[in-house]
Image 1: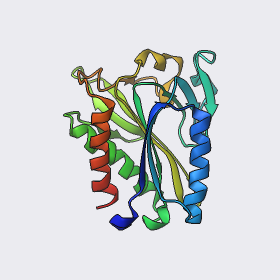
Image 2: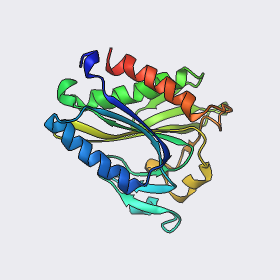
Image 3: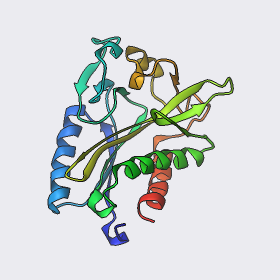
Length: 214
């Protein structure tokens, strides 16, 4: 584990960041982290409404191809929606300092989300064969509340997590999210929790340090 003096840089963007711009910034930062010229980076942001297609996306799962811009991306997974009211966190870490274990890294990302949701009284759960974090509704129905998509290049991670705080959930109807149509999608607001992005960010930062820099 890195020592505290090697803590990553934290960046919080207050405007909607175009997807292409975010990819360019991540690509550049990953190269700099690999070369040792810049620190690891945890980047909190929101995107304008858009769909992204992961490396295993099925074109049939893009139900409304003309609704929003669609971006092909090198992260794992299938179709995902990003938009205002959703907290995206791009995590750029040097995994050579963290055990070179991608499976464990993804597990840590999931646990980070689960622990953070727990701080606001939401029980997030893993499901075998379904990446991301899920909540069980009173009816027994399971809804996805957070997505995880990761790419690793030369042992430096990028992409990361997104948590639905208060997005327009109707935007998800243009895709089959992550290729799963037998389950739904929800948000903290949809679960009755009206929390600000800044409040959630503070929790995420506290819980990140407990998992990744303990």
